[in-house]
Length: 365
Image 1 (spheres, rainbow, N blue to C red):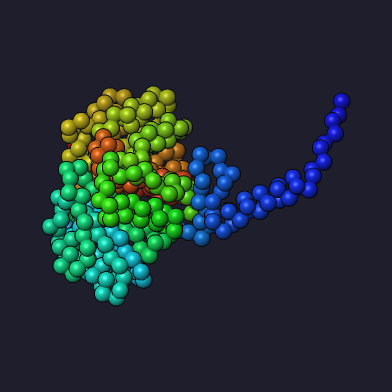
Image 2 (image 1 turned 45 degrees about the horizontal axis):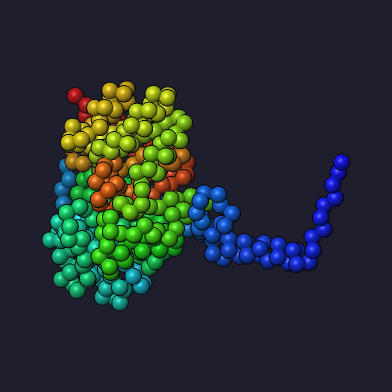
C-alpha cells in the first residue's frame, strides 16, 4: 500500500533552503566541503598548484659547477616575497638562499629562521644572523629535522632536501612547491610553535588546521611529527595497496612499516625499494628482514647520498617529506609529511624511483 508523502511546511522549507545556502557558501567562498566523509573538513583550492622537482646529483661535484640547482629556484622565489619568509632548516649553508633572505629583509620583508641546534654554526645560518635576521634553535638532542619555507602565507617549499650544497647538488632529493593558503597556514602554525613558543618534538600540540586540502583537484594530506601519528597513517595506506609499493628510503628502521611491507609482499603486491648504502646494514635496519621476505631492496648507487623519504602506492599515492621511516621520526624529531593523491605526480615519482633503482642495480657488486 502506497503512503502519502508529507507536505513540507514553510518553516521546514525555509530552514532547508537556509542550510543549502550555507553549504553552498561554505564550499564556494571558504573552500570547505562540509559533506566530505573523510572525518575532517577538506579545504578546496581550485586555483592552487603543485610542482615537484628532483635534484640531479653531480659526479664528481665541484663548487665551480654548481648552477641551475634547486637553490637558485628557491632564491628566486624568495626574491619575489612581498611580506614574509619563514624558514625551518635542519641544516643551512646555501649562500645563494642566505643572500636572498638578507635582500628580502633589506626591502622590508619579515624574515625568520628556525634551525637545529647542532647546525647553528653553518654558513647560511651565520650569514643571516649577522644581517640581523632572528634565528631560533631547538636546543635539544632530537632533531628539528624540517626543511620547509613559507613565503607570503601562500607559497610552501618542502620535501627531503636540506638547505645545503650537499642537498642541492650531491644527494638525491625531492622538493614539492605548493601554492596553497591552507597548507601555508599549516606550516605557519608549525613554524610559530617552534619560533614563538619554542615548542619542539612531543611538546608541540597536534593542531594542524587543515589536514586535507584539495589543490587544483588533487587531494593532499599534511601532517607533522611527532605530535601527529604519521606512522599509523603510513601503515594504513600501505595496508590499502593492491598492486605495487615502491620506496626510496634514506633509512628504514621502523618495524611497523617493515612488517606491513612484508605482509603485502606475501599477499602478492609487488614491493621494491632502494635504501641509502650506509644505512642498509646500520643499527636497527630492516633491510635484511625485507630481503628474507622476498622483497627486492637495493643499496643505492649514488656515490654521495640517496636522501629520499618516499613511498609510492599503486601508482596513485605518494608519501614524501622530511620524515625518515624510523622510530626517531615517529616519536622524537620535528618532521612534516605530504601525502599526495594524484596519478600524474605519482608517475613523476615512479620515474625518479626507476632512475634510482637502475643506478642501484648498476652499482651492485
